[in-house]
Image (cartoon, rainbow, N blue to C red; front, side, top):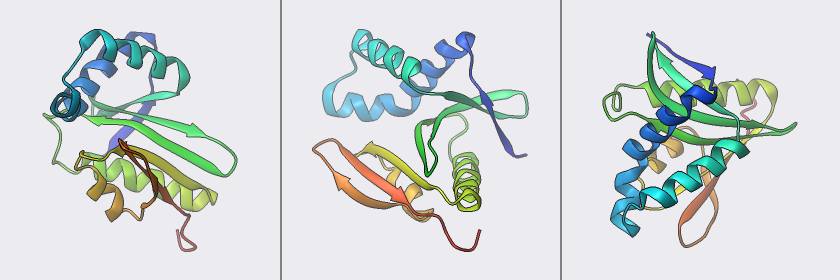
Length: 148
C-alpha cells in the first residue's frame, strides 16, 4: 500500500504534535530534556508558518510532512512517522515521491535535521548532501536529477 499526502487542517493540530513528540521527542529529550510547554509553543509557531500535510496509509494517519514550495525549491520538513509505522518503508516512499517530483519540476529540495537524529542516513540515500551546519542542525540540499 502506498502512502498518501493530504493537506492538514485545524483538527489535525493535536495529531501533528503527538507524532512529532513520538518521533522527535527522544532526540530532544536526550539533548535538552523535553519541556512540553516550550515544545507546544514551537509546534504552534511552525503550524502557523508552514503548510502541513498528513501522511496516510489507507485510512490510517501515520505521520506528517511540511512541503514549502517556491519557484525553484521545495523545503521538506516536519517529517515525522509514528513509531508504530517506522521501519516499514513509508518514509522512504514519501521521500522518493517528493524527490521524483522535484526532478520532474527541476527544483532543488532543502531540509534540515538535528545532528544526533539518525534520519540523516535516509536523506543521504536519496541524494541529499550536507551543505552547511550549525551546533544543532545539518542543512541538506538535493539538486534535481537530469534523469527523473
